[in-house]
Image 1: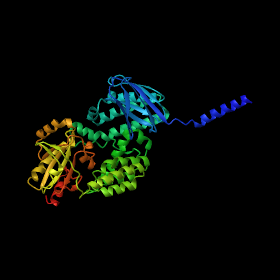
Image 2: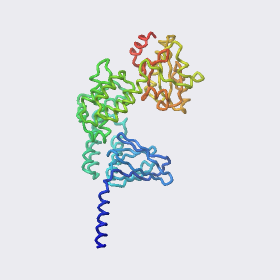
Image 3: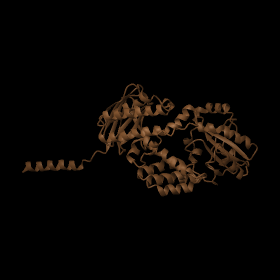
Image 4: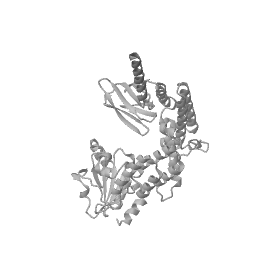
Length: 463
């Protein structure tokens, strides 16, 4: 009887353990890195970024990732970028040298074949196509021939790499997307390489290929950057065709995504990525927010945009401008916004940086406006948002470009300054117009390159 009791007790114990055991819902990403001295490794992917601690003594890293979306990611190991494919449950281990690019990463785990394939795939671009400049310098026939060769090379590699069937089919589509995106880019990139803004592809060039891509594949949207780029470009073109002469492109783009895309994930993500930036400089804040709120079905995304909207209302027309204080003045001393207001002049502010190409293109046009409105009731103020160590570069740029007006150095990037954060500045250059009393006329004023639009605004204000 005692023996029977022990048997029943053992059966009960093991049954309870089985009932408690849950399916694995995480993966362990680990590895060893040679020739690396930093403290973190960066992992990024579709809507995902994480820093993983690196043990410099043992040259290893390990992290448990729970609930991640299966797909393509990149490990940034110093300056070396390692493409990886992760599922939500399959552990992956790798050995990589941070400096020896000729030494391929070695992978262990059930997805090792896929990840080894990604390494081999990455080599083919250089071997077949050379580099971007060389590729887009070819004439149409040479370009198409090279792209056909590249596409066939990738397809053969994928077919021979013993990839899981589902992944292989997804990768074949990804290769087609990369091919279609190159077709889409050819005309513009060829213009850049040769400096010929008038170049137009012939009637025989297969421009229809990228336009035949389905807009509603959420699996490919999460896994393929070429796919995301393709459909974004296509939707931009549709929105530009629909926009009227005086229409707001940002609002039209939201409407275009809503009307053209049916897949919920794709639609919500496209609108959200656009809204995070566009809502900060749209000319129709209330309308833009209302449409986004009506079109989006993602609760989290809607909260993010609502928070931005509520903050942007604080920089609406007529509101007191956020303040800055203690910015270095090129002519000596330090300057605050309070030093500039109250003198009967409007203040036209240019937020710029020495690394920003678009900012530099505005400089000669801004100088013309300064000359045109010299001795008028307006002050032209340029605020540089380079890092503190670039102060001498800022000074030299002013000399080289003969910049005029009030030149100020904030000493930190725009995402670290309270003044620019209050204005939710997410892109440069940015122009702001403030009235003589320090109230906002426009938190996103026309640029000098907008020409008549800026002149009209000044004239309507009596400047």
